[in-house]
Image (cartoon, rainbow, N blue to C red; front, side, top):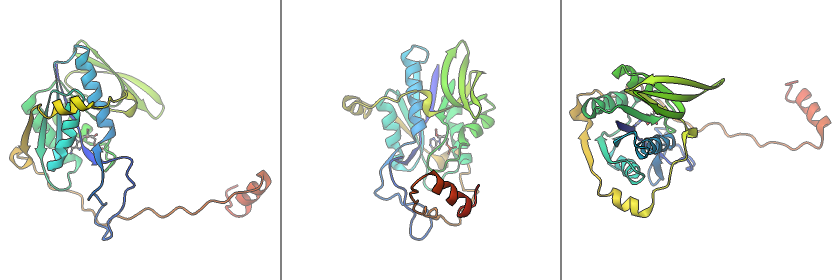
Length: 249
Ligand code: AMP
């Protein structure tokens, strides 16, 4: 069984995001970039399944500018066997990414595609679902537990009401939740070894997909600053303020 894992390069989750002065986007120059956090869980799960003898190959794929390759190298350093970098510049919307991933799937013919549940930069939560529709494969989103059975997966999903257990036939798309596992750290020797693993380069423009944006971004603004809070001396004062000043009770 072959598992393809989609990894996206995003601004590191610890970075305080700053909006560009001209309002055209957020500052990315000299900002720490990392793999989108749930994509690390997707890689970890694929590697674990391979280590358990239930998969034969884990292939990491990223779509983006030259530096996006770093995310593939990181996946290789924690156990993926090889990588694919689809070069594409500029803003990529989920529909464009899923159409490019569709082309990669048609070429690679994996049995499973693992992805993150959501990218922390655009917060779209769309790419996995769109890829599933394009391929006409079953989808299991927000997976917090994955059991590989004969030709099937049993998945526990995080839903608003709690946990839902479903079964999907393979081939399938699975989008991974942060609670799925604890991603391992890449050791220095493994980072060095990963440099020798193969990474295929493809150009988005050669794949015959229209990746032009369909959404026009008009302006990016900082959210309004939160006003400072106040301390009250006791419950009676709190109730009085909620009643007479905030007028919420
Ligand atoms: P989104 O729909 O943008 O929230 O992204 C959901 C998931 O799709 C991410 O967690 C990644 O696994 C995958 N994905 C999105 N954009 C890319 C990209 N440019 N390259 C590789 N994978 C991506």
